[in-house]
Amino acid sequence: MRKPELAAVIADKADLTKEKANVVLNAILDSITGALDKDTVTLVGFGTFEKRHRGARTGKNPQTGEPVKIKASNTVAFKPGKNLRDSVNTTAKPAKKVK
Image (cartoon, rainbow, N blue to C red; front, side, top):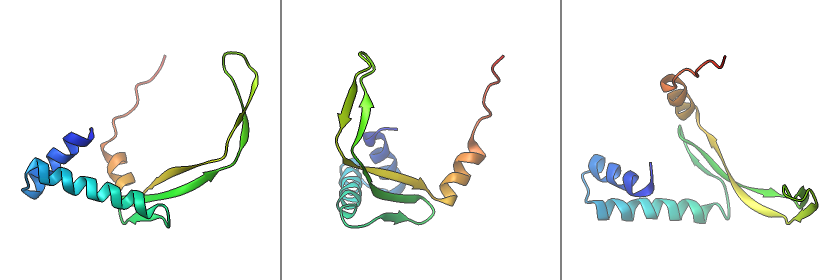
């Protein structure tokens, strides 16, 4: 599901126009993004977003095999909440067996 599809679902469930739902969705995403600068964002039952620091490290160029220095950076991690994990696990299809 992409962002416009999610906005359409929000519009349908909240009895809003698609434009208003898009404004609401953008406000939520902007708020989460802004809050991650200072703290973690926890949506009880859904999950937790947190900023994590990745230290500088040495990688490898896959084409040449030469070492490459990778700069330190920040990234975002998401840890799903119990309700989300349970929902995904109850609706998951069994994996196909490989012969």
